[in-house]
Image (cartoon, rainbow, N blue to C red; front, top):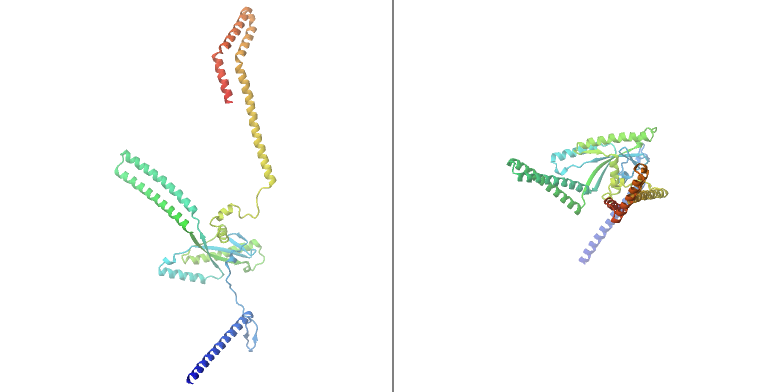
Length: 409
């Protein structure tokens, strides 16, 4: 009986504890429900001097954390600023250089921290801190190093030849030889050091990506802050630039006390910043400079019209055919003249004979008819004998030149 009473008592205690837990859970659920209900209908009620409740709420300026995508959305880039929201918001960006905080002494760390706290206390307008990680393409640097190493190799070869010539001549004292040897050693060490740099850089770039972090402070300005509504767009942009530049200079002076070097990005650098943000995967292969040269910023094609292309091709074809025809015609004219010249060379002897006979006939009255007839007879007889024997020496030279001209043609 005693055991039954004991078990009954323990059971009653357990049931009582369970009931208390259920009540506590119900109260917690009810409280959460009321908090959610109040959050959906926020009406601050304040008791006035007469003890009545009023429905007026006290308004506070709300600074909400904005997404970095609000910074990346832009309309255009002008005057070292990013224009957003149809020119109602302008952004200027400050690039900051990192510091070796871990390598500083405790006194230097305290100074940097105090300066940074002062920087935060002096801010009177919203800013954004943006960090961008970039993959460094070392190909250009490697090519530059290789060119420098090739120059160092040429200088080394030059100094080695000079030292070898001095050694073989034996006319130089030991101090001069030692000086030249030291110069050769310096050139050789420089060349070996350059080769090691190229080897290590190529190995590092092949095994893993080389990353570089860049830090930016984004300073916005809203045209709503301008009270003058009579300003046009150009005046508003100029006013925004002046205000943003003043703010950036103030931030840069405060950051300089933290040993942080900073500068305002130009328009081209802002283009590169946004290009890297939107094209993170392709930026390693196609840099912003290559993209601009390739015409990726063009909104329409600049290709020539099809008819214009056909006209250019036709003009090119006409020009080529005209040149070919002109060359062929010139060659034909030269061939005709060469043929006439060859014919004259071939009949030169007979022409000389006929001309000689004509001269004799013209002077027949002076030299006498008998002498003239005998002279013409001898010319004909001599010509027949020469032809029968194969021609004179001059004829042989002429025939050889004619054959050579025909072979060349």
